[in-house]
Length: 326
Image 1 (tube, helix red, strand yellow):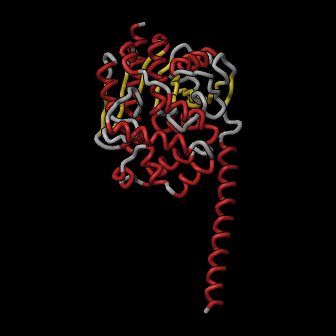
Image 2 (image 1 turned 135 degrees about the vertical axis):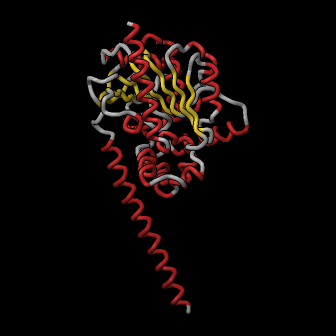
Image 3 (image 1 turned 90 degrees about the vertical axis):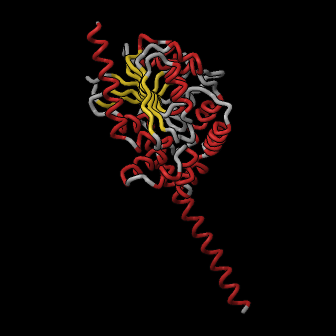
């Protein structure tokens, strides 16, 4: 009897060793692919705000659009956002914000500094004016870019953006989600493990409800998987994730925005709560609010067709208005 037990014990230990070896090999292969994916695909320029990383795409003859990624992103997430909400007729510029990938995080950086870095990048690219499309925690710097450089923004689109802090209990839960994300971005292995073994829970932390997750179509699930996968490798994004969770929101300052502003948000967003959209709509003069009952923080994936059409019409419509005025 004892020998049989020993066989089972050693068999179990062997299985654990094999599983651990498989996990390590899979992790190393995935990280090699992830680092390869972000290597040599972008450009980096020096600036008073440190190195700025960016990538461009679409039609060089099209309307220029500055795409500003959310938390856990980088230029690569910006590229994904462009693929989801823009067509190939636009000329998009996706930059990595402070502390993400190869963009440096200056000492004592602020959202205003990040806005100035956008202006520096556009000067480098010899682009005078852009439409701005921002997602999630890309919102604060996008809003302040519109505040500080109104002459350079033809239109502003906020996709599930952070705008203003709240003292509500629900906000406290959203803040806890942000803290969890900040923690798991410290090490590649933590985020990789979450993205592989706890994908549903990770989508929940990112701000999608169980109902939203359960209702995803195969195409929507594929897009959601891309967003999760493209946050690998996590460690080169960790400084940016910390900054995102500690910098002060723009709040009432957005009342100075003069650019035509479209706000798109889901009421069941659990990461950037709907009060952000309500605050922006009530504070930015002449802004337009496009709200959905469901879609969570991955609204632009869940309602891709409608969001893409709205973003396109907003950008082109306001560009045409300005051309007719000039």
